[in-house]
Image 1 (cartoon, rainbow, N blue to C red):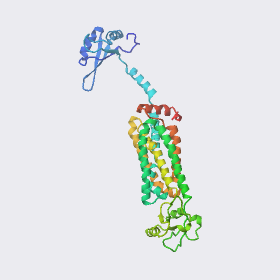
Image 2: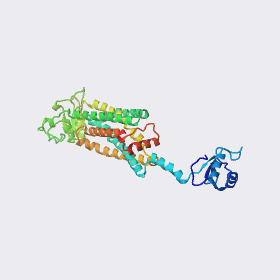
Image 3: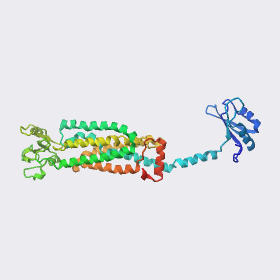
Image 4: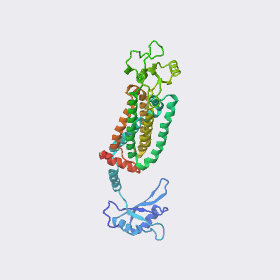
Length: 416
């Protein structure tokens, strides 16, 4: 209006002018309000009018009079749209609010780089946590794990179907729950349940290893007997675990009727050859003898399968989808593709590492040791997720970036 503060020059902005008006025609219409020094109609790349113009008058009084007479009114009464007329902003005036908004809403280049590094660490850390919790080693080596627990051949394959079905079913539960309970709650609860089930699996394997059946060492001169043992071997060293650790085969009755044979004369330890295994399983004696090459007969096999199903039911709804969902949300628009690429590479590298180490560690560590290691990883992951993972459910991408800036760049990460 006329009481506008003093300006550097009497330049006006005109909006909603007729698109067919050129500089000459507009100048003629405005000449009745004062001397028009310059008229510039704003145009697009094709030269078409954008229906707005900049007009420079010879004095501030003429410019203020023009605003009073034309703002919100038609240039020619009864023709065209109502004009928007105001003082034009200088470059300095136009830039100042934008600069202030950037200071309030956005980080500088150094802070933006620091924030992106933090988001990458969080996203890649979640992928590491997913793999170090042991999911793919359990899925890849499920038959081998069940063999370690005492299942044999097709029995192990049939028993593996139950955990696999559990994993598929509870993945659907995760798809339903992730938008209802949020990423943070779902992940934290999944970590607690997954860690507890891993500890239970480790304890079952450890307990089963301490209740392994004994055997009677045979004469070393017999080519089929395991050369690592002889009749003088102390009884506490002649059990199924010792036999298998020496790469031999335990030949004895399976665990039936929920009890194991404790008579040493009922079992032997033979070399790992086709002839020795066939001789073992073709013996005409009761109870029927079975060759165990990867694991020992145990009354805990059913409990181990149940614990594996609990593990997968705990993992699938939270640790399975949440790392991928969070990684798809937390990165700035310009770096979302890079962030997800780094996270995917991290996931597969960790997957490869854990897969390569599982069987060697299983031979080196005490029974159940690999599962205790994974349990420890979930405990560390729970603590880190509690402090550093914000909730992103229901937030737009812009809102998520504001949450990270407000919490992380201020140093207040404890509320995550």
